[in-house]
Structures are given as structure tokens and as C-alpha cells.
Length: 535
Image (cartoon, rainbow, N blue to C red; front, side, top):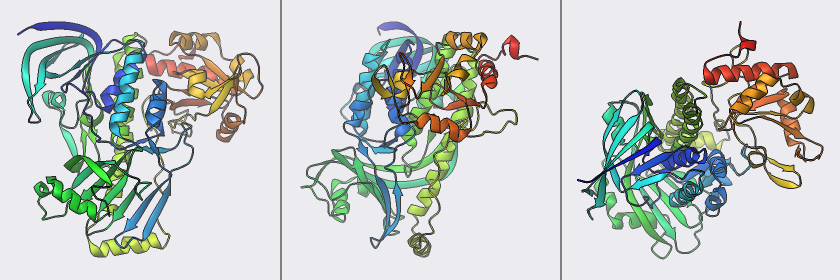
């Protein structure tokens, strides 16, 4: 067998959405990445079908949001109907989000993946991609991780044969984004919590041949057969049709069965072409450990959830961006590797919140008990629907909770993005102001009072102080409609620190508090408080 030896900073295993996202964000930061994927080409078929505004903001960071949005379907509303066709619930999802775009989008996953591949190619240091390679061995030591990957070739039966070439890859860190059946998680012996939701369904994805009388996504809450129907971007559609107790899942793999069920939705071969038909078991599982020394689990390797809130892929891509900025700081020597312990501390509660919401939603949507379904319908038709769950923020980790140790808004929530202007150029805040740990204020006097030690630390991490003004001036960031002035006033703060993943680290309620806030950030990141703040 021939052997090749490669060296990098970070090995990424798996090139689904989570792996592609983390590779793109690391490479944008100049981190040397080698990405290993057992398939020669990208999967090419949809799995995830929804992203929210936060994911679009991540795509914006790597410069491919327009490529993605060209085919994405912006959701305006989301409906539930009962088996008699009565509308039980309508959720308005069409507003402007904290990220400045629509709140939610239905998408065709290959378009997302193609956009991220474009981001890899454009990156400051494009990753080396080893496609068609299967990881057969992983070892780690005090200084890094060694991976041995063997060449794979399709066997024509949905599997692979192994070739002669073996590639040895040495990296300082390994990110396992290799899916729900993660071989790396299994090699590490990491167990998962089973949260008790296992629901089989037939998933049919189809290319639209002619316009359908179906627009925004909706659920059919029919105990006789619960179903989800919705667009996958602008050219495809998804039908999720639940398999009932006593039915043979194998029967649902036959094309004839798919057409039989689609016919009940008045959909036939003249309307769509089936591109994917799969019997899938919706599950909810969370890895008990997301980090093992120099190996970290991302996406489905770390957690899986039912699809009812469309947050499975979103949660994985949030993992990716969270890990990316922390790894960069560790690799640059700014932070010790203990910073990476905050990854699971931050991401697991956020993900578990979405899992809980998804399970609760699924139990309401998919009940097959006729009496329970009737009570549900009566409650929702009476207008007594419970409130739609709020979009969760971060509740622990690298956040400043203030003197009382309590999370107070807007700490842990996304810093909003709106259009601003600088020197006649209009654009979104992130693109114009820059990204990273930013001290943001709308008061020039507050910015002027930031001391030299705080500025030196911010410069050390390539970040700084940003002032958003209402008055046009050379080089000024101008808030033409007063959005940011109103936001700061609403929260009673004069400055905030925004993290690289756009969450608010902490706030200052007066100008004299900014330096102390920066000092606490320095201590949180480096583990060492600056001299002036000790004691």
C-alpha cells in the first residue's frame, strides 16, 4: 500500500453542513484545515430542509449568503391543520430577524452545501479536501491527533471498496462531524443519552415539475396519518408521512407506496419527480461527552433531534461556529485549551432546549389517540394555543453575568444586525463594522473613555471599539434610522461586547464600567485577569 503524510492545524472528518461550516469558518481565519469525507462527491440529496436567520448570518460571514438565498424559500407562516382540514394554528414567521433577514427559510440542502464549498474555495487558506477517504484509525497524544484514512471507491451497491492508498494526517485538533452514526464517537466509546423519542416516517423529496397549490410549510395533525408538507427551496418539495403502528416500514420503501400516499395529497407524476424516498426514524439523542482531549464532536455526532422545529442542522452549524472562533484563539496562543471546555457548556443547554421543544411539538402533532386529538383540536380552535416558544439564547459559558451572577438581557442573546452606512457605503453591520470581539457603543464619549490596557487587549485579539453614530462624518458608522440608538436605550446600556458568533458577551451601563467589562472578558478567555482588575 502507498502512504502519504499530511500536516495541518485541524482535521475535520465529515463534510455535511456542520463539517463544511466549521471548515469554512476556520479557513477564513487562516487556520490550516484538512477535511476528510468518505464519499467522493457531496451527498447531493436533501436531508435537512430548514435553516433560520442565524445560519444565514454565518453564511454571510463567509461571503456566500446570496448564493444560498437565490434558491431558499423565505417562510411567511407555518400552519397546522387537523384531519378535517380545519386550520388549528398559524405561526407568523415572516418578520425581520435579529440577523436582518427573514426569520426562517426552507432550503434544498445541496444548494447550502454548494454555497459552503464555494466558501472553502474563497477562504484565506482553503482547506485541503480528502474526498473518497474513510477514517480507519485515530490516535491522540499530548500534542495532537493522528488519523489514517484509506481510499474508498463506490461498489455500485451503496457501499464502498477500499483502495491501496492510505493517507496519514497529523493535526493539532480533530473535529468529528461524521453524522449520527459517528465512527469517531464510537471509537472513543462515548455513550449517548436516549431522550425517548423514536418516530418512523416516510420522507419523500421531489423536484417540482409544475407549480403546486402548496406554499408555506404545514403539518396535517391527523391521527390517521400525521404528515408534514413544505417546500425545499424554490424548486423542490418535501412530504413526511408518518408510519403507523403495525405497518411494515419495508413496504414504504417501494415507489408505488410513495405515489399512493402522494395521491391522497392530490400530487402525481405530472406534478413532481421523486428524487429521494427514505424510511427514517426521528430520534432524540445527546452524546454524554462532546470533547475527548483533542477531539470534539459536532452536529449529529454530538446530538440528534426530531425535525418538528427544523433545528437539527441549525444546531450543528451553531456548534461549528462556536468551535471555530475558540479553536482560533487556542491555536494563536491567546487562550489555553480549557477555553474549549466552554463549547459543550454553551452548546448542550441550547441544543437540549431545541430538542425539548421539538419533542413536545412532535407529541402534539403526531398523537394517534383520537380522544387526545379531539381535545387538542378543540383547544387550538378556541384560540387558547400556548405561546410559540421564544428563540433560545446562551445561558452559560463565556458570558458576563454581572455582579449578581444572573443572566440579564441582552447578555446571551444575538446582537442585532441592520444596515449602516460608512463613507457613503451602505451594508449590514457585520460587513461594515467587522467581526470578532467588538466593544460597540452609540456614544462617542463612551468610546473615548476606553482605557489603554483595554484597547491593547482588544488589539491583541485583532478587535476594537466600534461607535455607531447618528451624524455622518468621515469614517463614521452611521445609523440612519436610529435603530441602534433605540436598541441601546431599550436595554439601558451604553456599551456591549459582541462575541465572534454574534452573541452579546456582556454590557456596560455607564462609561466607567467598560474597562472592567473588557478586563473580565480577558480573564474569561485567557484565564488570567489583567493586573489592574485583580484584588
